[in-house]
Length: 339
Ligand code: KG4
Ligand code: ZN
Image (cartoon, rainbow, N blue to C red; front, side):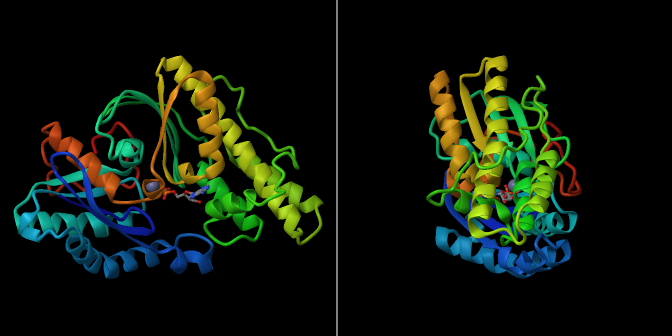
């Protein structure tokens, strides 16, 4: 099958085996350089670029996988959540391909793609787990009983974890997106995670809600008190201290939710799960409690089409009906809603 992902600023195409979900090829064209001068994603630029790139990327993916269009058995695309004008490009292209090739079309929920991405390539398939999804748009704790059977335990009241990374990166004058840059800085020798005492918002709230806007504001006020512009070492220590505050909350709430649900397997996915310190801290925390941990492979953490193909293959395996071609995209699609 062929799957397309265009929910935000990455154009991605993957070819996977329709029966097992084995990924044969994943092609991604990143638009980071295009949006960098604006310090964030410009929706109009994103959709125009998806339109330009998608067809050559489909041809490239088919070529790399050694598959002819006539060999395809199904087409899938992300139908939400995401930017409407970006979702439309991938979704409409996928529907047109399905119509022309007379193939079933599967609309896939982007969040379900992230959520199940830790199981890509796992011969055991999806197992019950407590899932943390941390991306630029979402921070979710989910009880996953099986593919398609989800209970959202908590989410963020304001900024998503990745959004907080990006906004703090911007405040510190770092290039967009801030997340990977803060991660790199915090890894520098001598970076001090305890240099600044920043708030761990809602860490003791007793529920699974998150809030990161207070932390962002705390960094803002701290910057007013420090030398302007802040020196290299100050920026590095701020990166390490901010990152630690986010990760402390993510790890604490994830472990509490695992204990509450009784799940022995924890999964972590989404762009922020690429963060080296989060991977390290979550690994240590799960190890100390005797919990199994699966974090999405780095290539499947940020937006990609392999995770969309994987969900579509699972749907086919469960004999789910194909999606009607007149079903529209849904920029606000939640988890648990029909994909
Ligand atoms: O999953 P994703 O590609 O897009 C959404 O669905 O939102 O996630 C992108 C987010 C961005 O906010 C980016 O800064 C963050 O993931 N990110 C990271 C790292 N790599 C990507 N955040 C922290 N550390 C990283 N290494
Ligand atoms: Zn995403």
